[in-house]
Amino acid sequence: MRALVTGGNGFLGAWLVRRLLVEGHSVRALVRPGSEPGALAELDVELARGDVTDAAGLPAAVRDRDVVFHLAGIRRAPRREDFFRVNAEGTRLLLEACAAHAPGLSRFVLCGSLAATGPSAVPRREEEPFAPREWYGESKAESERLTLSFAGRLPVTVARPTRILGPGDKENLLFFRLAAKGIHLAFGRQERPLSWVDVGDCARGMVLLAERPEAVGQAFFVASPDRTGIEGLQREVARALGVTTRTVNVPPAVLRGIGSIADVASRLLGRHLPINRKLAEQVLAPGWVCDPGKARRVLGFEARVGLAESVARSAAWYREVGWIPPAPSTK
Image (cartoon, rainbow, N blue to C red; front, side):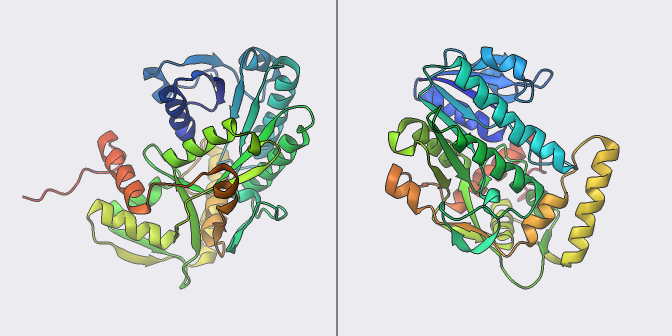
């Protein structure tokens, strides 16, 4: 396989690149001009400088590739138009480049999101209509519509990962840092169910979508069959860190207010803060759960890594790179 991975220097992208290399595939990674290659600097990867929002550089990136994994996108932004410009319009430009300049393409794999289907305490299934509740989810729903609209021109498929955990993750880092300070956040009395997947399992699932002919023209949730919740995740984080935490209750209205203020601050400062409107809405949703049965039945995919293992690996990595304090001394 000769693969192009957009967003290859990101969290999931780097794990996917490693997986492809281990399996003996050739990898080209599309990396934005001026951005650091990150983990890719130590890997046998061809770097292509370009941006999915700039059509001029995409033909060279997709040329001579068998498979394109499209992971590039943004998860945090203070404006709705920012999400759509990158996540939706960027997808359209990449699809157009593939249709015009990659005649031998055997698969276009879009990294979608459970956020496109919207929150639910009842497991979502792939055939249900989109019902996103925030800007990120809206943009991912549009990127998936665009991808599947090319089904007559390209062999497309969509992976819909749930919340992804594992070494290198920044989306859940806040909970590790709070736990390290002895804080456990509570957002009301109810435990909101949450589907999740370890990053290694997610990367393996995406490779499977590129290889299995049954995947063409379809979308698949990529998730562990086990579920947790934001509070359950925090309890597991505390166990992994070996700390005792105290509960701090955050009223939903306060969290939404903080998220809105943070978005304004992000626009003024020109950088994305760890709290934002998107995170607030996701945390306060009644649940984020899906049924991973279709991927198991059609593709034979099953997640292998349990929550305790995934969180423990994350905690060890965060400590190793200095993102959270080292373990307390036992002396």
